[in-house]
Image 1: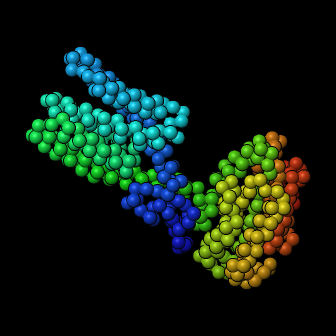
Image 2: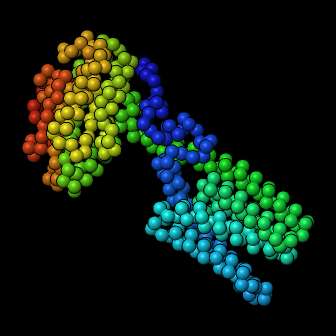
Length: 410
């Protein structure tokens, strides 16, 4: 029975999502690149809500201005304030409809939403001071709205709510609001602010935790459960994507197929648990050389790995393969059943090609496979190369040495 250590976040030491989960979300702030991802995802989810909320806010401000004009209670100052509120709401709605929404909305919302709320809070205080107590119903919306309806994150929304309360208190003082109304409205504001602080913080933590778990699950689905290397599906998708990009940009691609020498014998001698540990150590050793965002290392099957290097010529690919071979040998993992060395070693087949419409990724893989076969036949613990001159001769699915010679790879 296989009792190897189950796959968890230790297998993804380079995962920002795993690191943030281990650090916890109590600070309500991720590292900068991850914070940007999180903010953009939340903005994408809130886009329709922001549009509706901003347009309703503009409509309410216009109706309030019309009411004042109709009742003859208007003055230039109040109409100017309502005009500013309407303008800000329309601008924010415009951002939510804009193609630049993800890039510009949050920067402006952090400034415009507190400014708009402060103006509205002052208007509400003035109305309540003159007996229009129904206007106090607007206050909870202004406390909760920035977070729940306008896409601000908790910290920014909390600052906005505090500014709203301060603007209301200052205006209530200036307008000589009756003491009973002032007392009730302050209590109303305090309860609303505390409610937002508790609910908003809880929901922000839950949202951030769900974001990290969702992204980590997606990441785990792309990795081999034992070694932490990418899986075969990711390799195929990545190679196809890079192939098209390289053809468009006239760049080269190198494919490395890496096989642990005499691994079946190793398992027979040392057991499958030791074999699993060795697979992980080899994956870590060769993975340390595949670090560029455009490159990928995947478990290709069994004891075999594959690496795809973008914009790498034959010389660079050979150097990379030799570094991998030496790194594995330097692990000094005993392998007394090997005819190549007294320790675990690898053989590497390298194919370097310039993609175009007449060539296929599968052809590059087969070319690397044939190079790996030559490395096995040549004594193992070595690197063999195939270049683009031989790529046009490949018939995909037909191995150069014939099917009866494939046993040399075991």
